Length: 287
Image 1 (cartoon, rainbow, N blue to C red):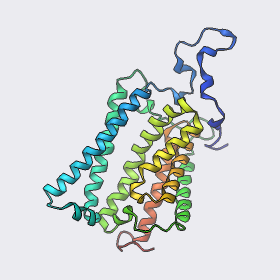
Image 2: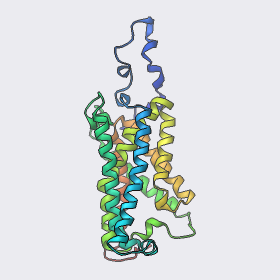
Image 3: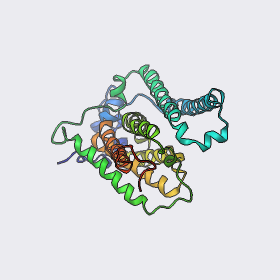
Image 4: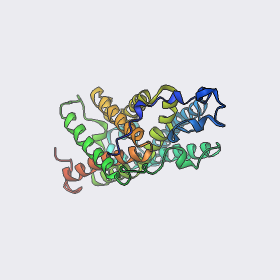
């Protein structure tokens, strides 16, 4: 038995309707009590609509703030900003961290007003379930490492017409180190909280687990589309990566499972970058 046992894809969430209690008995006091614990959320589509509007506004405001700072205080033109990705990278990382922090703050404040478990538990952050799977978090982590290797090998057959925007950022030690730190310390925590903690149970309750895995995976691919130059094959691969992460969360019934997958995936990419740059000493990275 492994952390990937007890497949949730075979369970029918909709069958947990308390009005359909055997023998026609009285339904449970709360509809949420009839659902698996990791699906017992108190937010719904209206909250998601507000979150979506906030996220769009958050993105626009943080990007405008970045450009305004660079043009007003660093005296750069838009053309210079576009042609100097390495110089802009530290500011871009700071803006991305600010965006993530505001997203998390919005969820923390708004979900904290709802009658549910403490915030982190309500968005799916629980220990791995008891039994043989508990204590084997390393399996999720190293599975993420293996997934990164598979994606890297598959990417060798993809030949974009132009350099990917993400590659343009890895041109010097400072920007590379900052991007690696964000990829390991920040991105897995925030992205897993939003995609697998907030969005996944909402989609799963409405459309079923398989559809929720597909939807969150596609959204995950779209989120990373710009840095991949919207190269179709790479966006599809990133969507599949997102589906694997959500599948891990569904299997583990906790965001901790997908977080460890994501952490392993990004950590392997960072290790690869360290090797390619000989410990951040040689740029551009060796290919």
